[in-house]
Image (cartoon, rainbow, N blue to C red):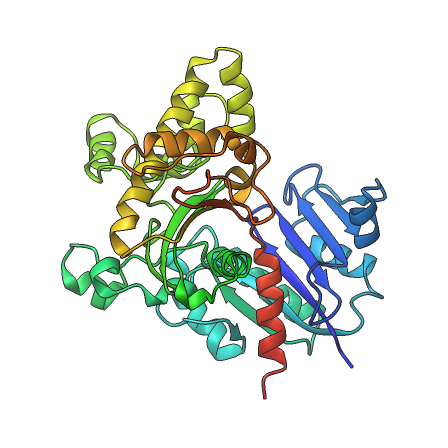
Length: 402
């Protein structure tokens, strides 16, 4: 009987793979990364569970042909892992934007794929390449079901008063202009894991979760449901990110186009790819590099980190208005899980929170439950996310559903 599930996350120049051998697997048996796709030296790196557990350097690294793109990378992965993929129950795909049509993970067919193509203009950098992954898997693994798991689905419970922009209402009616939110699969996992660690039902908790990585957002969760989040129509709105600006005055775009000679395309590209930590520091979009540079006296690095931390604190404080109480504030994502100094500075910027960190617990990224706050104060936690596991579980549920 088919048991395994393959999880695929297609980016513009990369593909992440994770193979889960059975429905009760909590970790993949194989992980792989295809990177630099379309460039001169594309690579495919495959790591087995044995190598991961033993921390041994037994990766299989394949140099793909120059210019090799997504189809060649998928083919190479499937050729290398042919035996492990022989009993696939389904393939789960991360799809960034589901619009209003999809409020839960969905078994894909021609009709649902056509619906997804209609909302691709809401996420032009993400959805087309996500759907390319689906189409390639249909070609390379004919007969194997494909399941879409949406970043936006978890946020479909946000109320109208929160998701509507104060723009002409027909923009929403005719063009779908509203706040959708992203990182939903991460929030769903972290909310469940936080509840497990606190030994309480997920639907009894009010949580503020900050997902901080190269992309950053935060979410207010009331009794297990998303009620507010920082990202909007696209993943550009909200917090300062690695290379994305986050919130700006919309008139800034008009100013740069009509008064500073930039084209609309140039401004859009700069806001997405050359802003955030990268733009402020004039050095890097990577928080680890910026922390190291700041320690060596780099003024741009300090400037970027200061702005980042303050803006996260301000966004979290704003989100707290959507909750009647807060059971825990949770950090997740690459920065949220590992950058103790960034967490400290975010909480120091949120001066009316009344929180006291336990310096030692914060330095070690939390105790057994993930707590980094001092006893007797607002509970602050660090919980590692696992979006791939959620995609695998949703895929099993969809392909075995009667």
